Image (tube, rainbow over the protein chains, first blue to last red):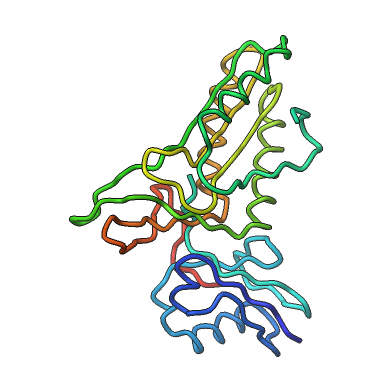
Length: 77
Length: 158
């Protein structure tokens, strides 16, 4: 069950990557654990997840083909 | 071009927003004689001093699909809340030098109150809800990531 994970702004820089495929994660909590394990530097950053372009404030099930984005605090304007 | 709600608008534009484009946008409204008030906000890149370094430009990037979606929601919400005749939103991507315009919010209404209030809310909402980031490029080639005053992200990885 591959999930696409996108990294933006400072997070892409810190993790050194802007896109990965993550198999076998059932929900966003599991995905967060995986990401923090793989990219420990993310732990010191402030970020939120968006699932399929919607901010995801609480744990949520993930499904095949979902696109998850890691978003730093916004700085538009 | 000026149709109100249903149409999807592209808000993100490459590079700075030119004053000529802004002037042209204003002039396009001369045929809409039910409008009595325009409110315009222009965000300009500031040459901040950070430490002992000076900001030369900001390089903007975005999660484009989500950003366009958020702009659309912000737009619909403003049309629902205020009596507006029309609305135009533009935000830069890529490099914008200090002194150039990176955000153009333009709302028109019959009377001034709706235009003023909507304009302010739109700018606040854009800063709060649209996934855009800016790299402040220094004159010596180094950079820092721009941080907005309204920053609501606490450290809560879901």
